[in-house]
Length: 66
Image (cartoon, rainbow, N blue to C red):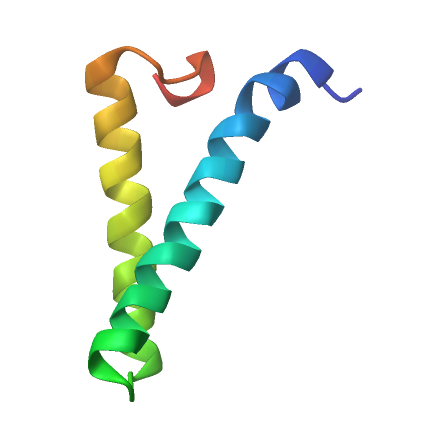
C-alpha cells in the first residue's frame, strides 16, 4: 500500500530540488560553457545536500528526512 500522505508531504520538496538543480546546472553551463558530466553530477549532489541541510535547520524538512 502506498502512503499517499508521505508522497504529498515530499512532492513539494522534490519539485523545489528539481528546480534548484536545473537552475544551478544552467548557471554553470552559462559561466563555463563546456562542462564535464562529472562536474554536473557533483553540482547536483551538492545542491541536494545543501537543500536537505537548509530545510532541516529551518525546520521545514518532512518527517521522512529526520
